[in-house]
Image (tube, rainbow, N blue to C red; front, top):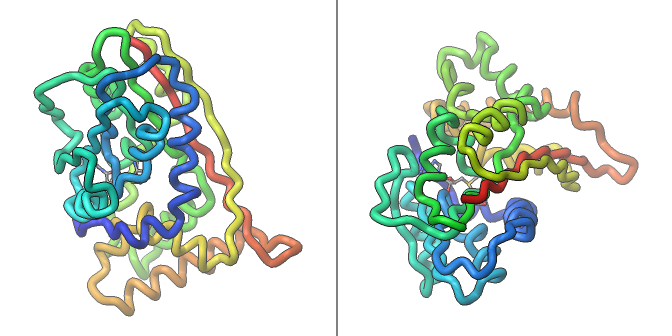
Length: 256
Ligand SMILES: C[S@@+](CC[C@H](N)C(=O)[O-])C[C@H]1O[C@@H](n2cnc3c(N)ncnc32)[C@H](O)[C@@H]1O
């Protein structure tokens, strides 16, 4: 898999970080001493944790060398680990295990969530946000274009690289942990300048696996253009020429 592009990802930094700020505000544990931000990206989500608990030791962990490099550059005083969240083998536990917009990149959430919960200290918490991406019109557009005869020979199987489920699915997993939990969903309505901005948003995230499979720059541009045309059908232009991107995100906090 080609690495992430932190600069492109950070173009929508405020919008991408707001769910972390909202999740942090809901976590009911006092003064966690140790916090790990799983899939910390370029360190933006970790800053929401540092701001809320400045006395805590916040460690950021991600399996992308480019993201960890960016985090080290922007926040040199913090601890950053280049590690994979699959088959976690961290030598220790944390008071708060936090993960914002990450587990959709990992399959088998019925294994991932208990694994993350297993590294939570007693009286600590696991706090997660996962985007409800699969049903979003932009994803429907990406999958439709990718499945067309023009692109399917390149992009076959990409749709399986993103995993997100509905609340019923997560409810079953969380209930099996025998712990108190809270779960909720929020729809963010992001104002974007144009349909091109919508493509720009997803170029560095959900469209990335598809673009990575295309052999040349001209093919990537043509694929993006086809997705753009599909998106025009499902995201109407508003009275002021802008686009609204409704983005639904599921949150949960489990207490140990
Ligand atoms: C959408 S970004 C989220 C970044 C940040 N947490 C935020 O809230 O903006 C997803 C991040 O998850 C990381 N990631 C994906 N799969 C991972 C894995 N198996 N282990 C560790 N990090 C992973 C990616 O490298 C990327 O930095």
